[in-house]
Image (cartoon, one colour):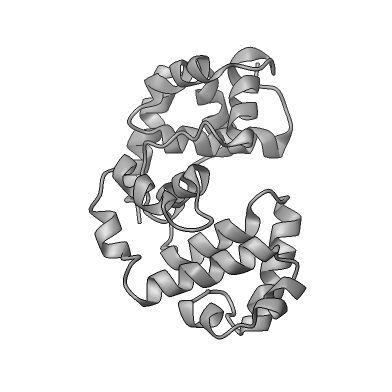
Length: 210
């Protein structure tokens, strides 16, 4: 978890370097990243289930998988090790996602995926380890670093929502390329994850930021 004082320092920094982002902070209040512990295995499973789906569709499928496996509110490796592949597919998972969840559970169970060791790595090294797992690409790894490892300085170029939010915040909705996007958020460092959280709020509100 992230200490409240650290988050307030992050918000103060972002206010000082980006006046448009400051308006978002005023509008949406304190950032909630790191405000509660999130189980790392569960976060990865949720990320795999939600890939290329709307939030509503992902939530529906995840709820079905939780009922099938008896997971309740938290997925554990044993839930997928014991689950039948076709039964997982019947919940709405693709063939690939059902296989990836099983592979992730196996990696966690046999020690190949060690979250304690992962926490010791810097951002890029951790992303590299995660990216090597079946079904975990760079975007999923970056979301994991933000929401499970509480890393404060991640900006994901592969996140469509973030890119659209940044376009609205700093370019009246017109598309910024990769280099321009990175340049716009460079001043947010070392708190680009926190800035990203506010960009996601732009998309939720579906408004331009003037």
